[in-house]
Amino acid sequence: MRVALFITCFNDTLYPETGKAVVRLLERLGHTVEFPLDQTCCGQMHFNTGYRPEAVPLARRFADVFAGYDAVVSPSASCTGMVRDNHALLTGVQPPRVHELSEFLVDVLGVTDVGAYFPHRVTYHPTCHSLRMLRVGDKPLQLLRAVRGIDLVELPAADSCCGFGGTFAIKNADTSTAMLTDKMRCVLDTGAEVLSAGDNSCLMHIGGGLSRLRTGVRTVHLAEILASTEGDPR
Image (cartoon, rainbow, N blue to C red; front, side):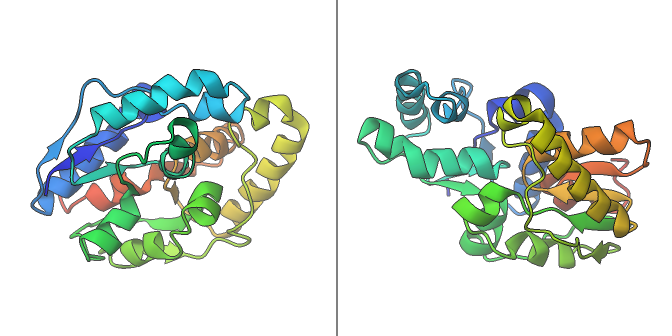
């Protein structure tokens, strides 16, 4: 199977370790992962803020860059949702099939135990795009439950939005902050050391709030937990 990593511009710029974790994980499972250097933004930022004509060339470029791969894997539910739901709408052409990481592992590879080891108390926030656009269900939790050493605790009101929503957090700052406050309260109620999710954008938003409050709770992308092994300094 010819597999490509679609890292997304957000991860490439701010969270490159997440992309590296995806590669380590998939290589450990026996797959060679290619990283097309010509990949750019999927156009979600433009599409969601009303600049749809500007998103068209980005959608077309995505189709060209990832053509020919058997599978394209991304550690971002929101960008995966953008490609799957909106690229064909913009260009009239069906884009290459993109899988969010947990979908690829559970549905395509048929694995839930990836050989991970992460001895920490963890709670998981299912992001809006993963729940409502991609409908990944409990696939991330299936993967986390199989991690050795983990103490996985349920997050209260897990399906409530964290308040990020891209530019929503900027345009509607007061509402966003209120939603963030509710989400942080739920995270702290679990007593978790680590908050995980499948989108670093949400983790950045929640993690920023937790950091400002000096809670000591850190945020770790699902891919980085699944890529962790016993003896790994990370």
